[in-house]
Image (cartoon, rainbow, N blue to C red):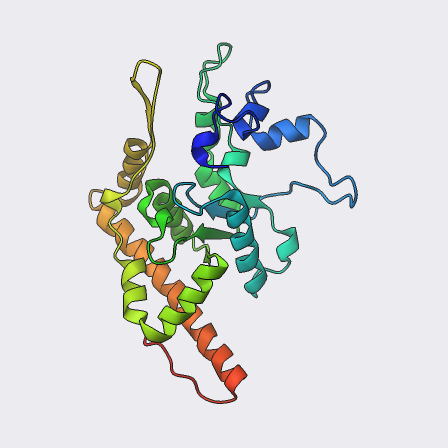
Length: 267
């Protein structure tokens, strides 16, 4: 379902609707109800998170099913992931409470409490997966949350894997071989100051939570007054590393398949 359908009035089966009675995250609600294992195989639904998934719901063709397929494909393809089937992914809409009202007893906000743990989660994860679709204009790279998550992973030396749809993987191969300079420009000319984030308002139109202002504050806190320029360079560096590794793997695959030398993208 689209992110805008996390509204129980519009979608009675949304994650938010399923957790209305608990006020917790979808995962916590499942665990409290005893829904923790596959009844046929006995395999656990949940585990200790080791893979942070950075993504956006906004954009044509961006769905949960497509996200899962892309993440699964990149984990299976990466030789540094020892057991892709055992990977436990952090997907915020399931792990973070979607309720933004203040609890009367504690005065805390369920969503804010969980969101404040993002950096701790990245600390605990072995890798970050960025869902970069569509390839020619990745929506995630225009979202301030995703850029902040990338920054947090790169600062900690966590490898960044790029998850793509089957169509995007085919287009990536074509661009690597035919238009590598364009591909580099797409992933390294980031302008974080222009990134977007959601502004939440109450029924009277008053701003109750401005993610962009909050995250921009974090960026300046971590990177100083020139934080946006530093962030742009940091993200671009992470993307260049991925492009270089991807180009190298493509050349090796072409050589193996053809039994000879293949033309190499100039990284």
